[in-house]
Length: 102
Image 1 (spheres, rainbow, N blue to C red):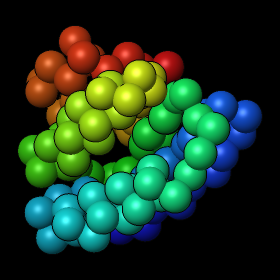
Image 2: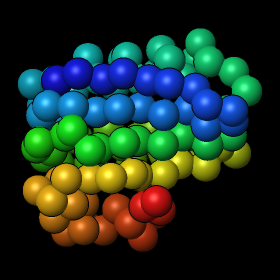
Image 3: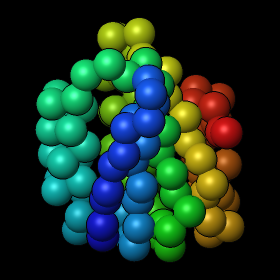
Protein backbone atom coordinates (compact mmCIF):
# COMPACT_ATOMS: atom_id res chain seq x y z
CA UNK A 1 0.00 0.00 0.00
CA UNK A 2 1.28 3.40 -0.97
CA UNK A 3 -0.17 6.85 -0.24
CA UNK A 4 1.13 10.09 -1.74
CA UNK A 5 -0.30 13.56 -1.48
CA UNK A 6 -0.23 16.83 -3.37
CA UNK A 7 -1.63 20.25 -2.58
CA UNK A 8 -3.01 22.29 -5.47
CA UNK A 9 -4.60 25.59 -4.46
CA UNK A 10 -7.23 24.87 -1.84
CA UNK A 11 -7.33 21.16 -2.80
CA UNK A 12 -5.39 18.48 -0.96
CA UNK A 13 -5.14 15.25 -2.97
CA UNK A 14 -4.36 11.80 -1.58
CA UNK A 15 -3.31 9.20 -4.14
CA UNK A 16 -3.98 5.67 -2.92
CA UNK A 17 -2.24 2.73 -4.61
CA UNK A 18 -2.16 -0.99 -3.91
CA UNK A 19 -4.52 -2.69 -1.47
CA UNK A 20 -6.29 -0.89 1.36
CA UNK A 21 -7.27 -3.58 3.84
CA UNK A 22 -6.93 -4.39 7.53
CA UNK A 23 -3.23 -5.10 7.18
CA UNK A 24 -2.42 -1.52 6.04
CA UNK A 25 -5.29 0.36 7.71
CA UNK A 26 -3.54 1.82 10.74
CA UNK A 27 -0.51 3.03 8.78
CA UNK A 28 -2.69 4.65 6.11
CA UNK A 29 -4.94 6.29 8.69
CA UNK A 30 -2.01 7.64 10.69
CA UNK A 31 -0.25 8.95 7.57
CA UNK A 32 -3.35 10.73 6.23
CA UNK A 33 -4.12 12.21 9.65
CA UNK A 34 -0.56 13.49 9.98
CA UNK A 35 -0.75 15.19 6.57
CA UNK A 36 -4.13 16.71 7.44
CA UNK A 37 -2.68 18.05 10.69
CA UNK A 38 0.46 19.46 9.05
CA UNK A 39 -1.20 21.01 5.99
CA UNK A 40 -2.96 24.35 5.87
CA UNK A 41 -5.03 26.34 3.41
CA UNK A 42 -7.15 23.55 1.97
CA UNK A 43 -10.94 23.53 1.75
CA UNK A 44 -11.28 20.33 -0.26
CA UNK A 45 -9.77 16.87 0.14
CA UNK A 46 -9.80 14.40 -2.74
CA UNK A 47 -9.09 10.68 -2.37
CA UNK A 48 -7.83 9.55 -5.78
CA UNK A 49 -8.27 5.79 -6.13
CA UNK A 50 -7.04 5.33 -9.68
CA UNK A 51 -4.25 2.98 -8.60
CA UNK A 52 -6.11 1.24 -5.77
CA UNK A 53 -6.50 -2.42 -6.71
CA UNK A 54 -8.48 -3.60 -3.69
CA UNK A 55 -10.34 -2.13 -0.73
CA UNK A 56 -12.37 -3.89 1.95
CA UNK A 57 -14.68 -2.59 4.67
CA UNK A 58 -11.68 -1.45 6.71
CA UNK A 59 -10.76 0.89 3.87
CA UNK A 60 -14.32 2.21 3.77
CA UNK A 61 -14.02 2.91 7.49
CA UNK A 62 -10.80 4.88 6.97
CA UNK A 63 -12.36 7.05 4.26
CA UNK A 64 -15.53 7.64 6.30
CA UNK A 65 -13.50 8.46 9.40
CA UNK A 66 -11.51 11.09 7.51
CA UNK A 67 -14.75 12.44 6.02
CA UNK A 68 -16.29 12.89 9.48
CA UNK A 69 -13.16 14.61 10.74
CA UNK A 70 -13.03 16.96 7.75
CA UNK A 71 -16.74 17.74 7.85
CA UNK A 72 -16.41 19.04 11.43
CA UNK A 73 -13.85 21.55 10.11
CA UNK A 74 -16.00 22.59 7.14
CA UNK A 75 -13.76 20.84 4.60
CA UNK A 76 -15.33 19.15 1.56
CA UNK A 77 -14.38 15.56 0.79
CA UNK A 78 -14.46 13.77 -2.58
CA UNK A 79 -13.64 10.41 -4.14
CA UNK A 80 -11.97 10.46 -7.54
CA UNK A 81 -11.27 7.88 -10.23
CA UNK A 82 -11.91 4.58 -8.40
CA UNK A 83 -10.90 1.41 -10.24
CA UNK A 84 -13.70 -0.93 -11.29
CA UNK A 85 -13.17 -3.33 -8.35
CA UNK A 86 -13.05 -0.51 -5.81
CA UNK A 87 -16.04 1.21 -7.42
CA UNK A 88 -18.16 -1.90 -6.79
CA UNK A 89 -17.20 -1.91 -3.09
CA UNK A 90 -17.89 1.81 -2.77
CA UNK A 91 -21.30 1.51 -4.42
CA UNK A 92 -22.30 -1.46 -2.27
CA UNK A 93 -21.23 0.38 0.88
CA UNK A 94 -23.48 3.35 0.08
CA UNK A 95 -20.58 5.75 0.60
CA UNK A 96 -21.71 7.92 -2.30
CA UNK A 97 -24.72 8.97 -0.23
CA UNK A 98 -22.24 10.85 1.97
CA UNK A 99 -19.15 11.56 -0.12
CA UNK A 100 -19.40 12.85 -3.68
CA UNK A 101 -17.54 11.25 -6.55
CA UNK A 102 -15.83 13.63 -8.95
